[in-house]
Image (cartoon, rainbow, N blue to C red; front, side):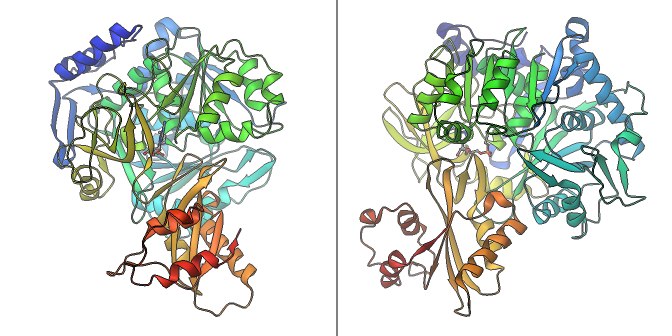
Length: 634
Ligand code: PRX
């Protein structure tokens, strides 16, 4: 059985062992899975080359461990519960046996479409059961899935499809979220028309009764091809280090990068972290509200819970539809025991007033997880007091797309929870704070840049198609260490609080947005000369997007211009990247070497003008006063 830590002593012992003898520690975890062939070595690595070989020589299929492995003991246990956006629709429940059969049918359909081991399949899907089935079906036949969040634009989807060279896109016709109906397939059509030459087929799940464009020869209905397949399919035998999936995420420069995770290490780590962080017990009902388009959905809706034999829930809708008590109603309806969401959702619901949560009793709740961004003290207490009624433990989990699984967190019943602190590393994780020169900062009550000193099984392996970029981004800044891009503080007891990104990445509602991406989009407007984008504190979203824009002066209507800028960002990236505020300015503060001084813009955006300090060393100090006096457009 995967280790499940139950006491502080056990935690300390496990941590010690994981540092002193990491190979034995991880081999013990890996032994609990089914392997077609055992590994010959636990770990070989060269941090500076981003080269990690975990469980080399081992042969496996992750879906055997998610599904087949449970049949003898949990075949009739509910594996997946699905709640529709529309409250009046019945929940869907699939047992482990039923889920395996559906995954196999989909695997066979993928094979019929010519998909084979190593091919890339992009998903652009709402949160329907078929998304989880499709992802697992890819893993079963060794195809590499890449799920693109369905809020991204056609342009952003096309970029990802092209970068991955995907042969197949799996989508739905429409997506229902709240009272919106989103035209998913038409976005896919637009994306393909932007030169996605690698795409041979589009597999479309029918999610509505509405008509939709259909291109004969290319498009295939899910119900036409999947439903007729046999419900069994031999799993592809995968090498431990074969890629399992690509997930695109924003960085500080250029276009998003495809983070690659591999089969064995990701399997071992997601199961291990799931069991410990959520203290899952056999009859618990676990619910993570994330979208599968993000890493949280991959690791803690699909893989982690299923590997652990849990009952995992998927929700199609939004927290405020039809009313702001939807989350709590679902928790009550299914007696949810572990609930995992993002601070932005907590803040949005908190802003709706207490009556929604006060009127629903949820005695089943034991663990309340938070993920994706720093949780502020007020939201933490509301979550703890109002949602958990002080009976459940809040766990603030810090991790990243690149880490594959939760790295720093409290463990319920084992380590305490301190508001705004992710707290302690899981055994096997060696965080360290460094100064900008790379010197390790020892002791407590200190702040620094967060790095991880030793590999863990689900560390990213590469960025798809550009290994050098992976090395440069994560392993070159501080040789011998993985650099997270985050700044952190260590308190007097060694607990870690992650403060936020130290690079040009903004965390908007828990979604990573690169400032360069937004600037590139804004700069496409023919009347824009230059732009600079920074984050600013936002009450609900954590951070909002603030754009400073210089125009060429040929603007007849300012409002129209602002609307066009917003439109371009929506078209190039998606609505999630639209600036919250835009300020039209005549110049941007620059250093003598011509670099934009973002620090100054961040302070102006945060309305912290008194903190600006000495600006006289700028190339153009006069511009600062002017920017401050300009009106901000919302
Ligand atoms: O800045 C950190 C923040 O989210 C970033 C990772 O974003 P992403 O790859 O999209 O993954 C989000 C879900 C795992 C981190 O670099 N972050 C994530 N969790 C926390 C956090 N910041 C503070 N506290 C957290 N618990």
